[in-house]
Length: 456
Ligand SMILES: [Zn+2]
Image (tube, rainbow, N blue to C red; front, top):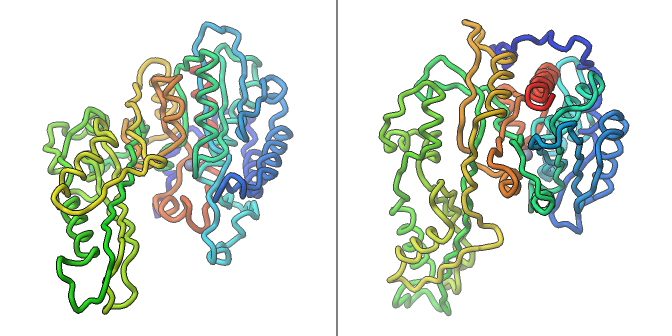
């Protein structure tokens, strides 16, 4: 079976880098259950303090040279560069991990928080999302600082407390940086964890690493139909369920139009495929569909009757939209209202959870040079030795990154810590999350080289 490390090159770089030590430190971090939620009050913040203690003892040079601050329960390290006129680099990450799905604890080969380490893998919740990159950032900085001391460019490490739930930590750190007047050169946050097959993008047999320059927006819209219910023997005027079903069908059947965005075109171009494609062609592909449209997913329905001879009373449905660049939550609300205007349906945007799409970041200058150089050095096609391209793309989910748009025009979501496809499918928020030792070490080499290029 082909493995992701078939794409690795130059694993002998930085020969005195202690990869085994780094894996051991990651394993110990994974043993600390920094689960956030379900609410702020129910979060065990002591676990976050324990993780900080582990970081302090693991990276003594970094912690002695950096200014260490707590922003809410998040942790921010500022490592002042010797040339303060250079714009800082932000290394972003989150300390929190998602809980284990109740009832699946015993399905884990090793306990989710056992911090198990074997010949091939480091196991545990957070191994790919994203304690690996969080600890890897610190490993790379510790290595650089203990080999040649202070950097020219300031590095600010922002470690959030609640990316998986409310993102209050990242919001607070972004606002604090804004208050201080920081303008960052670029930021680096979690990304795709994968070496991607570019066949779907029109480049069969080729692979690349995705760098996400933007995130889709998110909107939950609630439809409510009121009814007093009554006996099913006289459903004169229809039931609330029938009306709600019609409203949902209207919204879904009038799908959002397709559009080829500039970012999708950049993605096709970097992958080496044809850019002159009708977006309807991409829409017909299961995986590319969300890149060319705002998606519509009715997910929740409540209030139905528990008996067939009783008509339902008030009913609600929640439809989840993922917004393509250029579409706002207000557009979504207006479109739904228009589509169901002739039906007795109330339409409401759930504002607390909804947000417009992120900005589209620029990838150029220092960031582009440093990332492309490291991609070329550490990731190659096994058959030809050709360097893997960096492919700009759109993140379909969400990350903390958009909280830093206020201080940075280049919020890059990119992970050099890669896993085999099936590991990603199973492991991100799933059972038996793990990362290979080789991938962890390679990711750290990648980051050392990026920081050498961008900050030394
Ligand atoms: Zn994550």
